Image (cartoon, rainbow, N blue to C red; front, side, top):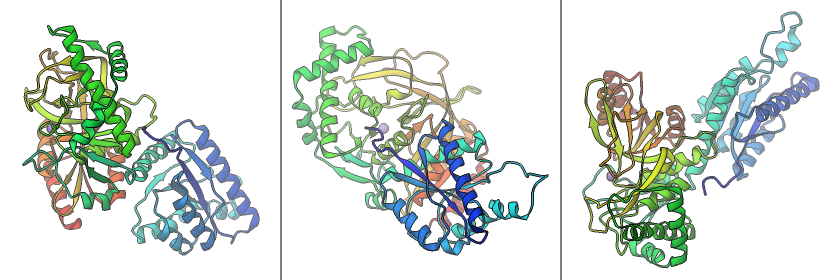
Length: 498
Ligand code: MN
């Protein structure tokens, strides 16, 4: 469900034939060694594939077009071992449409002081060959990532690894399909947006279905399938009856199991990877999908509440970008709910009515069944937990009318000072960087929403690079943010992104 393609990245070395056949042979040998070692490092999440050295306009153009049409290629890494006249790259670059990394490295780490001569200099001249190439990419206005350093350096390898995940977000964005089983909540502004522009910019397909169509699919799920899933829940989660009758409690849980199975079948059948619901528009569904949505999010589906399709798509993309990550700590939709404003203990309690993804849970997860304060359905079952501690990023994609803006806030997740036994929902608690005071002020100036797509497993840099590749504005709120500078940035951006 999460990431079905076995993506690869192509390694293309630029050179020219001015220095003879022997030099080109060395270039090819060095590139092969670099690719082999990168793959052996265990640091890169995807395989790097060596391509023949690029020296002519024809070969460059053909290689980039092959990269375009090869479904398994998620991006190209370019390095110019020797000088590679950049006019030869124009047509290939013009036609290339996938993520691009410029690895500015050289084969040797140290200058060979005792033996260095002009042959060596001509063979190992990335220092100026890569500048010629970078000039052309800049002149053409092509978005790319530049990584500088020796290829054997773990820091460099980690930067390549990090960019690979960004590239997956870029490549996969145009495969995200969001199912809306209800419209946006009436009168709410920030969850709205231009779906045509979203498809132009991000490639997202955002389609509506009558809620009763998916409800029929839920009703068609057999009792035996429901019972089997409820058994799984009871094995996996702690059951917190809190005075409720056990049989009645189980019946409520079974409603969510039926929704999980029915929703998943409907999404699979119609090929959607993200979904929105709305507590005020549930048709014949007996409960607001809570536990059911939480389980689907954990499986990799994007989710946005109250019709928030932008958050649903962003959660899906961030889940794809972190797919298969070792020691991943989780990705979820969250909502800024309530503050702790005690000096020195400031933070925002993050929660939602129900639908927080258990991938961010720390410790045991329980099932509770409680009334909703909104809507008109029976008490929904939900998974309750607290989230992990540590650094994360909260992102909000807003539609400003003439453009999209992605707001990215570094946050520090903590445990609340005391448990909250009466709160029947999953929570996270964080302090936005650089402080609650500056972070929230900047967030509000930027027009950030109350719903966010949150993850522990990506960096602001990765999401900023993703936004740049989508051709949209990104603003960062982090340890270096000052209000004066941030407000100026918003003013300047309003001119640039006109
Ligand atoms: Mn909400």
